[in-house]
Image (cartoon, rainbow, N blue to C red):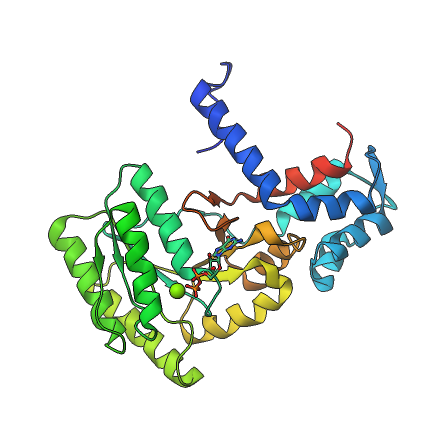
Length: 310
Ligand SMILES: Nc1nc2c(ncn2[C@@H]2O[C@H](COP(=O)(O)OP(=O)(O)O)[C@@H](O)[C@H]2O)c(=O)[nH]1
Ligand SMILES: [Mg+2]
């Protein structure tokens, strides 16, 4: 969507606008990570010492295993081109960043309490609505009354329909009703919230499995996406969390939130590489517009821009 310039033509104004928006978004998302990087590499140059790059990546919270893997065999002085190639290749397990599946495009949102699930649902709903799509929400975190209220408040604000039930009721029924309603009303996108915590981990695993099964059933076995929300301020520790959820219910991809508050942006390399999953979007605030699609190329280039001279 971004940077799709037609050959031999000046970029169209709309594309330039989008590009600018993306640039400023990435600057905001990684401002703390970038200032950290700049303190380690105060002067830009054409080639940078191996140890300096290593230190920079460690300080950005990139996992040491991954750093070793990425830098294996590189020269003592590293050029932008060589480093770029290595860093981008950490994301190469993914070739498809498209979250869109057959209508109704259904997204089941999972993750621990406080990761940013409900807020991210609002951001996704807002984005799809701006794209001209119709959206319906399912308040599947029935464990806490506050979670139902929070999603209802977003639905009202964004003027989007929501399917909900009383606290303690079956979240699978909410998921089923949300998808059925989307099918009946020809709605494009269904986004379903889930609880991040129950009385026990086993309960949570069973509940998520059941919700997932019910979604498949409501969709007549058509595919849908299970997206894990990770709190970016947790850096690498979020990986263990994601692995635990991945064992309960196979995850299709990740959205990382709260990057606005952290210098641990380098953890995105480890999260993507260790989990071998796509990072679809990144979140950088509490407002409905604070979401941007993630692009490995763009991410790597914006890091390299901090340290290499043109
Ligand atoms: N700074 C910041 N705060 C966020 C972001 N996403 C969510 N939050 C805040 O994190 C808290 C928990 O979010 P919530 O969506 O309720 O998490 P949930 O428990 O996973 O549903 C709320 O106060 C949100 O406003 C983000 O990208 N940046
Ligand atoms: Mg919530």
